[in-house]
Structure formats: structure tokens, C-alpha cells
Image (cartoon, rainbow, N blue to C red; front, side):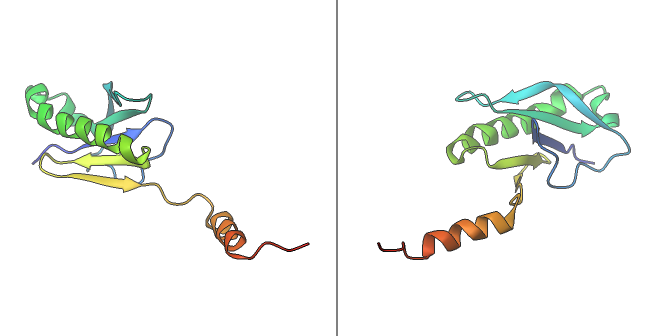
Length: 116
């Protein structure tokens, strides 16, 4: 079984599914963007986190998540949830909070300005 670690932005709910587990554990280590103040909490299966070789097994996935957070700075940290199983980092963006409001702003920008 491969180790799955999720990085969830502080203040946001998970967008994708959390790793398969009966209980989840939030690690004390947080990932911090070196260019701004964005932080991500690491969530992992509890049984895997108390394992004997967890430090060695989790080193590579945590490095990949750290790099994804750093690269996410260029798009304003729109990604609220990263997840990796050690090979590929999947990113989940949070859905639009109010689609009706965004539709109104686009309609307003498309209509011509009234002339006096």
C-alpha cells in the first residue's frame, strides 16, 4: 500500500477526497510558501503516520508537496488541496463560491455604458 498525503490550505475545507483511512491525522509540520504567508496542513492515514518507517517513507511525498506549494504561488494559491501518492501531485481547486455573482459581473462588463 502506498502512502498518500494530502496538503490542505489553512482555512479551507478539503475539496477532493481525503486519503483512504478509518482515522486521519494532521501532522504538526505545516508547509509554508517561502514567498508569502500561505500555509498548508498535511493530512495522512493515522496507521501510516505512527509506523516505524514513516519519516523515511514520507520524505519524498512531502518534498513533492512542498514544491507544488511553491509553484502554486505563481497563480495566487488558488489550489486549496494537493494530494500525492509519491509519483504525481494532484491539485484540486476550490469551486466558485457564488456563480450567480460572477455571472452578474461578466454581464455588466459586456453591456455598453449608457451615454448622457
